[in-house]
Length: 85
Image (cartoon, rainbow, N blue to C red):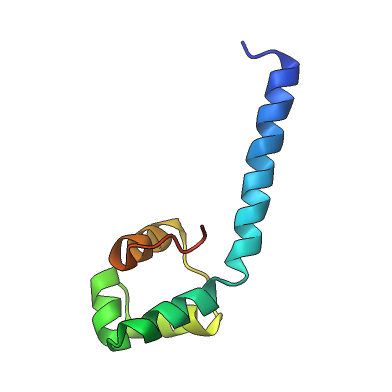
């Protein structure tokens, strides 16, 4: 059993990390758009690498939709860069 003080500290750290992640998610569409532009590849080619449709990639780039955890992991892998780091 974790002592209550340690549990409180742990939960505070976890909630802070989650809060910071949400702040970074506000700018993720710009990060995605910039990375896609830098590659020089088409949206269709990048979407295929990510296993998503070009339309969905466009929605991520425009900010109409936010990628989920799995898609962020795929972006990190394809671009070899942490999108929210």
